[in-house]
Length: 509
Image (cartoon, rainbow, N blue to C red):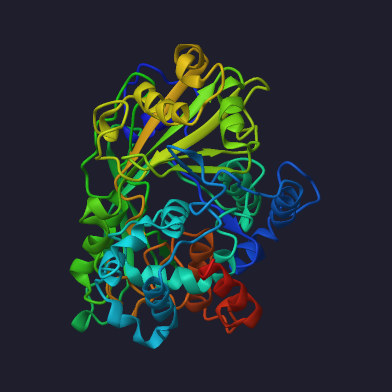
C-alpha cells in the first residue's frame, strides 16, 4: 500500500499493511483468442519451460470453477426451489426482448445509440429482478444505466457462457492475481528484449504538428512531469520514425483508497489519462468523445474492499456458509441495498502471502446506498465497517449453534487490514454511447498515433476484457507498421447451432 500512496498521493493512511486488489477480471478460454496467442509467446516466471498460456490453462484445468453459492438472499443460498440460481426467471416478453436485441445486426448497432439497458427493457421492469440479471450485472459489472449496445455485444460474444453463468464454469482463473500472473512476466520478457520502462512520469500534454486543414495527425512530442521529483517538467521529442501508442482512458483512474479505520476521501479529478484524450479531441474532430465515458460517474462507479487476515478463520467461515472452497466463489447478496459481492480466490492469491494469511475481496455496485447493518452510505464506510456490513449479510444465513453474528469481534481480530478502494470509472467502458464516441484504433489521417485501450472502436468484440486490449494492440501494430497479416480470427459461437440450442434451453429454464 505504501507504494500506492507514494505514486498516487493517497495518504497518509493509519494502516499500510496487507494487500490491495482493487478489482479483477475473469478470463475465458474460448473467446480470448488474441490474449492466448500473445501469452503463448511469453515465458512463465514460476514454471520454466512453460508459456503463460500453458501455465494459466494448466492451473485452471486443475482447479476448475464450479460456483454453487452464486446468489444469496435472506433465506440462504438460492440452490433449490423456484428461486434456484439454475432458473433465469424470464417472462416470455423478456425472452422476446433479449432475443430481439441479440439478433439485431451489427450494421444496425447505431439504432442503440445512447440507449441504456433500462430503456430497452422499460416495459418489463421485472427483468431487473431475475436471477439472470443478478448474476449478469455482478459477473460483468453492468448496471441498468449501462449501454444496451454493450449488452448486445456481450450476449453474442459470450453466448457460450449463457448456459453456465450460474456456476461460472467458463471462468478461467490465473494461479495468482493477474498482475503477478500476467503483467510481471510480460514486463520481464520485454525487458529481456531491450524494452525500457520509465515510471513515475505523468504525461501532461500531447504535441501535434499543425498541418494544413489538420487532416493529418502527426505526433511531435510528449510533455510530462516527474511525479517523484517535485513535478520537474520535461519533453520527449517524437521523431518522424517514432510511433506513439496511447491508452486513452483507464478505469482505475482517480481511485481513492482507505484502510481498516479510514474511509476513502473521494478523488473528484477527471480521469488523468482521459484528459490527454480530451486534449487530442480539441485538435482533431474524429477522435471520439471522452466525456461520454468520464463525465457521468453515476453510470460507472463502484467500490471494492480487500481483506488480509492473519489466519484462515474468515475464509473458512465464508466457505462453510457458501458451501464451496476458495477459487469457486463469487457470491452476491441480492438483498443487499449496496449490492455486495464477495470473491475468494484460490489461496495464496499473492506470492508474498505467508502460509497462514488469507486474502479475499468484495465490491459494492451501489456505493451511494446506505448499508443494511451499518447505517451510512457504503462509500463513506471504513474498511472495518464494510466488513461489519458483509458479516451482517453472512450472519443472516448462518443458523448454526455458533453463528458468525455472535463472533464478529473474534473474526475482526484476525483482520490485518481491509482496504476500501472507490473507483469512479470502474465501469466507464459500459457507459451509454453512440457508434462514434470511441475513436478508431488508428484514426483516419494518423501517421504515428494509435489508441490501445478499452475506449477504442472495433467491430463485434467486447470491452472490459484483456482480449479487447490485446486485439487493439494487434490492430495498432499491424496498421502503423504496414504489416499485411491477418488478425487473429475470432470465434462466432452465436452462429453455432449446438451453443444456441443450449442457450435456448437455459432461457426457458
